[in-house]
Amino acid sequence: MTSSEATPGGDGQAALQGKRQHRRRWLLRGLAIIVILAGAGWTAWHLLVGRWHESTDDAYVGGNVVQITPQIPGTVVSIGADDNDFVEAGQMLATLDAADADVALAQAEAALAQAVRKVRGLYSAAHSSEAEVAVRQAAADQARADYRRRQGLAASGAISAEELAHARDALTSAESALAATRAQLATATAQVSGTDIATHPDVLAAAARVRAAWLDDHRTVLPAPVAGHVAKRSVQVGQRVQPGTPLMAVVPLREVWVDANFKETQLEHMRIGQAVTLSADLYGDGVVYHGRVAGLGIGTGSAFSLLPAQNASGNWIKVVQRLPVRITLDPGELEQHPLRIGLSMAVEVDLHDRSGATLSSQAPREVALSTDVYRHDRAEADALIARIIAANEGEDGGAAGAPATTLR
Image (cartoon, rainbow, N blue to C red; front, top):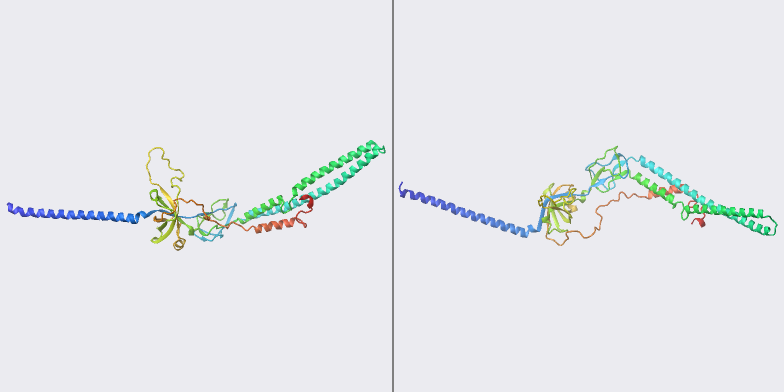
């Protein structure tokens, strides 16, 4: 092959290699431009949006799980609701056999009647003691007058010294009997003074036992403390239960919240009251919830665990901790799209408003959750007690036979 024939081929390879280098330079330039633009875009996004928001998907729905437990022992005879049923506050959830409670109430009523009659006897005894004192006083006065007359007769020799001694002994005996009777009167008066039958301590104690038995009789019916859905029913008909035994739970789903676990590095600018947007895996991104930061946790999960980690000895690896952040939800949105306890949530907190506090410094002004279904109307028990007292205190009522001047 001659040199003239090789030159055109060498020029072609050089031209091809030049084109490849030119294309590579433009690709590198394009890649550099893309990287620069991506970096600039990310920087702009961080400055304008990213640094004003913190997000996590380590968040779960929480709520009150109201345990239904009996206050008295008994045997379950009926169950008024099952799992997933909705119940109103005060609705019957379970009923216990009331036979034992009825017997206890009857015994308490009988004890109250007996106490009333016993107190009537105390008043009568006090009245009898006062009458006995009057009799003993008259006898002592008579014996004293006889002794004085005999003293004058003895001085003139009209009677013997022996008869005077008998008169003195009679006076001493009458005074001793008077003192003993006055002591009995004091004892009887101390048991009833300042009271009438209805306010006597023995009657009040018996009346309190009637109220307790009446309450136990009404506690055989277990009502729902709040409105919500039934969960975790474990009780069965015929089961013998003791006070405090969990029978079921009521969950008020209208009052749920979200506990979002943020890394400690995300909490620098997080404050109470900041706006939050949330989405649930149950509904997807198409349903958005709005809420507010209600409080930031005062400790990590590991700090409050049953066996807290001890890093004072041995090898140690730093692990970024997470703190729970309580988020309240819009009740209207919850009404439209109900949530369940434990569902996963995606949370994003808007950090623009940093005027709030990191920790609450004021005591709560309202109760978090309350119920009045256990506030029985005790007027019925009071009326029952009044009827028992009236039936056993006699026609004169009050302090039967008690002298007002002495027993007050």
